[in-house]
Image (cartoon, rainbow, N blue to C red; front, side, top):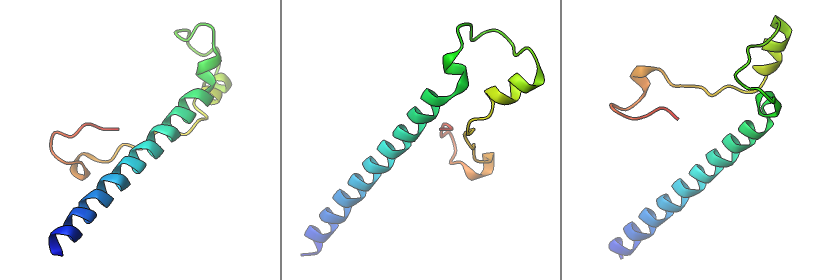
Length: 77
């Protein structure tokens, strides 16, 4: 009985991890598709003025955890 419960727990955690990863990917894709830079014809061109700079960076920026909050040798999302 305990082995069956452990197997169900592991399976549930895998499904939860998969769903969390899909949620992250969907949110990230939406952010990338709706960013103002995606609609520029020449993306390498610098903004002409400060207002244009603010418009380009008006989307949600990704939060990177502090170095001590990350596990050793893990990449940043």
